Length: 405
Ligand code: C6P
Image (cartoon, rainbow, N blue to C red):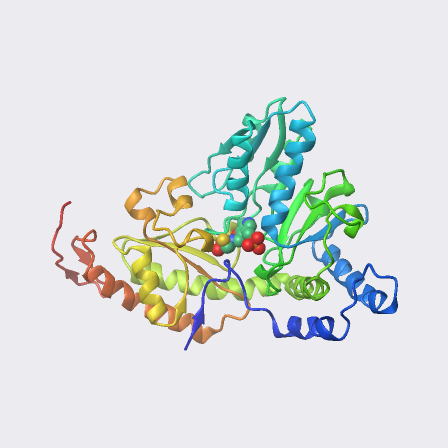
């Protein structure tokens, strides 16, 4: 059996989505901006995908949704264009983000800092969440933008977007949220929050990789990042990627239809894994309250078991998981989100992210639980950092040798 437990990194494209995309490669391949029939024949598909996307996030007709190549582009677009529009060509000098944002935000902030922008990195609480009052206390007269993710990719923890939006509105500061890990996983209703810009990425909800979008409230001004032709009303140039736009619309419609039912079913499987591992393995912790987490995510930490060792063992057992965000998994650094919530350095090296999807089966859940428990026994037996008197799940106490470094 092969089990994919890394759905926060990317997801399988739903076969129904592949079917919807297929005609737009070799049959209906016209450029939607062309005036001939080859071009115009693609218009209904684009209109449908736009409607599906507006409906899925309950955007209003006054808002804009602009397709981009990915959320990394959407995030770069907002930060770089707010910089140009309000700092270079305005009287602001400051941006506020959280310290647990995705690298596509944090690296862009570094670039802006190198260009003279002041950036505040807000701390998170022990749940891994930025509290709304913290945002308020760091906004100044010079703040152009607050950018706080809707849900964190490593922990799944959901941030108080409604409260933060109210504060930004009251203070007259633009508010961007990276919605990548929220859209398609939990209800996202743009008319019940005050958010100026939101980034999305289709491959997180069983759509294709390489297509995303930026939501823009009230179609407000934001300089383009990509200059060129008049695609998407001149807001984002580049020939429209018709099959991928179709795939994004379709996947988002499927993900958000009966979302509560889908969430409950995924959460039940997630909870089964989490409960089983916490009960069976001593000195094991998970990050964040489950009631405030995306339903598919567990960040689990097992004292004495290095994350990379665990990944290797899981991989040998045909289980795909990660130690954190996929783009940071090649370095052997400690998990930054765990450090941010106050875990010690040793514990921060033990984080394993398991992320499920609506395609995860009960058999896969049982397989992961069994393999995980065995893997911990194997790895703790050879761990130099894990050395204590450990009670076994059965209750007997096993003597382990103590090692001090
Ligand atoms: N996070 C993860 O393993 P792209 O790659 O551009 O479609 O999405 C980037 C991105 C932006 N924001 C958040 C919150 C994300 O989680 C991601 C992608 C993956 O956590 C890959 S690094």
